[in-house]
Length: 517
Picture 1 (cartoon, helix red, strand yellow):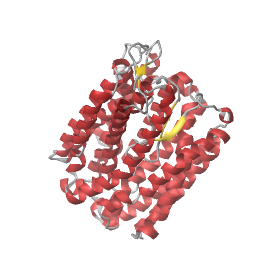
Picture 2 (picture 1 turned 90 degrees about the horizontal axis):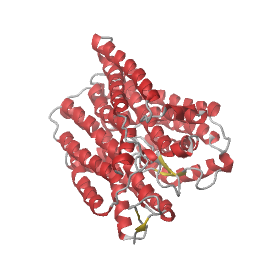
Picture 3 (picture 1 turned 90 degrees about the vertical axis):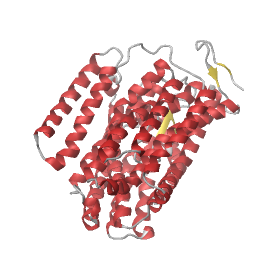
């Protein structure tokens, strides 16, 4: 059954885990976050088919991924704020519907350019629904049931993560890449039906009336201009359009910082970066997730175009990472809470980098057991060591009143790292034009690219060794420190929450990346 919340939150309903309504509400949050994750996962596997159908070059494939990521990153903080202000269920449902409509546009896309535009719109929908998933649990479940609900959200999301590559590979095998997007429609309709009937509304009565629209607009401007400069600059050179985009990117970033610094209620309070530990954790996040996203953008193409894997085989190839993360990541988080995060944040990226270096062997060995699996296992081990301490460090370094904001910022930094890597890495490795259609050319470029990513990832570990402090971690207690759980938004990522809290502002966003395996 459900019961009224404590005073101070008039009209709010606290759900219990054992109630039918509680189970339905949990289902809505799991499926909602799973839609965004599945789409990102399957699109990576579908890139070779998309490229062939549209006779697209590497830059177009980069935009298919980056167009989605840039609007997701730009509007993610705003999405959490809108949920706090206007209702978490309302904004969550708008995001799900928006995502579904954009998915129809993606599935019907007649050209690569149209697909990129639809992906840009789709990213906005993801930015609206993503913060609401965990925030609804935080705000709607009774304190004594909240940890259990978050654990179920995490575990069920992990199952969705494991199923994603299989579903995507199957759809590509029996239908076409367009069904990768069409599959979102019935799932979204089901989520909307559940949400309307069973998810209670919640909002922050203390949320400011002012919405930081200028900040969000400037974020889109400078991220879009930067992405254009990095992707198209490699193919076009320093043309007037590329130089102009670079000027807009720099000017937009400066204006964004100025606006956020001066606003009373900014989307991104820059004061949180005064914490050396918080700034360092996010710097490590940027480096590590940039290396991971860059490598994992190219790996499905390598496996299918060069090594002859089917889509479903390529999708299944990284399942060991998901299972390693589900089993080891929570344990790594608990260990970090006792001994401090520096050791794991230093060693984990080095181990993950070693796994990426081993994956360079796929350029010469297409056998899964000897050419792919060793790198996958080492990579998964390194990721399992790293991600929970990394996210919990970012959370605990911020003041308690900024818990949700800290998670959302860490989420955004990870996505921004992936955005930059996907834009820069192919050109840095000599993969431009239609290189992905020529196996020998692509294979050589892939080997260079994945070794670059391996070095970057290891550098993230070195950076952590010199900048991350263990101070304060040995005395953490439940309720004072973030609880770390696996994030269904992406395998190899974690979500954070403060057990017993009533749902921090900014929607207690789950931290993670798109485009993970």
